[in-house]
Length: 256
Length: 325
Ligand SMILES: Nc1ncnc2c1ncn2[C@@H]1O[C@H](COP(=O)(O)OP(=O)(O)OP(=O)(O)O)[C@@H](O)[C@H]1O
Ligand SMILES: [Mg+2]
Image 1: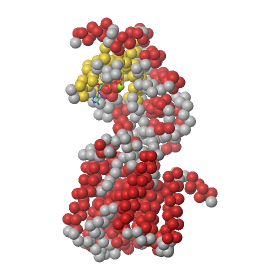
Image 2: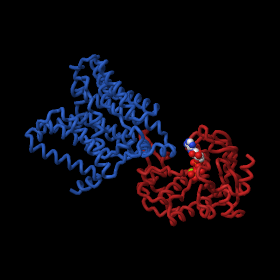
Image 3: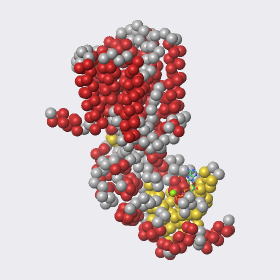
Image 4: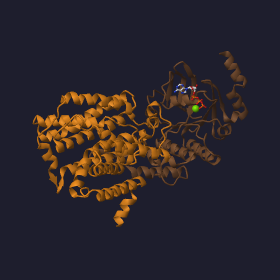
């Protein structure tokens, strides 16, 4: 097993009086797809927002490649190689595909001290990336608002790849997709892992998770209640862990 | 002819409609008034469009970003007082040309501080500033007109370069600069991303605060430049200088196809919107409609265009918070 790219230790997050996360320990490894599962409100999105630099944790520590880090913004997280594709996709519908892929990190060249955009190069690079991902999008200049849900996921993945991300986090990437588009995104996720990326995937779809994930972590009421390798578990067990019917979870919750 | 065809095909539907509307009302007014279709009147319309065009460029940036500035006309008024005072005090006229943009930029900075740092919706924050600036103008002018200013500035801006007045070159340069900033730099891209969704822009790693500050400062600077032209032309400043310009600018920019909610804009549309508005106001005056009705026409047009956009499904205000209702 490769060394962990990211280690989270004792992460807690409180919103006023509400404890959304408490004492979460987790390791994320390169080349591995890690699935986060759990009921609505279990804290999955909150956890990845902490990893993504969108929320500062109330407690705990994050190590990237062995070094402690603290992210003040998604930009900081990106600088550490972490790219996040949020549940509410953070794409600008009014901008083109290539503009979205480069947004916030545009290629520029200076003319008389004015940094002008290198539009042609950005367009070319994005066309290459789309082809590499086999995304079936022909025009990188098309506005993102005109794309289907699956195509938008491809654009978001493109953006993550272009950031040279070493960890790509995806929050319910297939939730709003039809069957064919879901297949496409799942195969993109495997491709990312094969390229040596670490991937964290949040999903409510157990069969999707069993198809792509190497490891699964179950959240319940802000706590991590279980961690399983795919080879060692079954969908029924994972469902029982999510709902709290599993004896391990019961024992854990009784102990508190 | 081919050239013309090409030029036409780069215009959007909205811009073509505006162009057609300009032509149509020109023909209508020409047949209604013998004075309308004269070279002198055309020059008057152009002259009257200068301040609105400059302020409209800034307003296009602000609306594209999801912002607005209802105090911008009065900002021009204040900048005009600064320019007027500088001229009155016999300041070097070359220096007087930078006083306007400088004052405007400074007031833009104040607006940004109030709206961005105060996290107040721009429409409410600038409405507050409008109230404050109005009284400021009254106090500074002491109820008196600033009139009979020296002609030095008029001479500078009236000088000609390659047979064309310097003022024309300066306006062309301002347009080009705004166009480049909007379409060829990260600033423009970030502005449009913020106009689409501030939260998403932030998640993409854009420094939202910096971009919003820059937009308000540029808009203020353009209003200051407009003030310079105003003083050069009229050589006086009064209490109500610039007071209808914010409404005119918002109407012209919205007519031009820029979304009042941000994310989408057209600079050509703004130019056409400004022309349409000024031709309309000029023509109505010539056929005998009292000038009192001008703001009625402008306000009516603004409301009509927005209603049509809502009806056409291009615009929806339903997701706005209290400030939008
Ligand atoms: N910004 C916030 N402010 C206050 N409370 C929040 C905030 N974000 C999340 N919460 C709360 O934290 C808890 C965990 O929410 P979170 O979105 O992480 O759940 P989730 O596991 O992603 O659920 P889902 O599967 O429905 O997406 C919920 O009770 C939620 O209401
Ligand atoms: Mg969630």
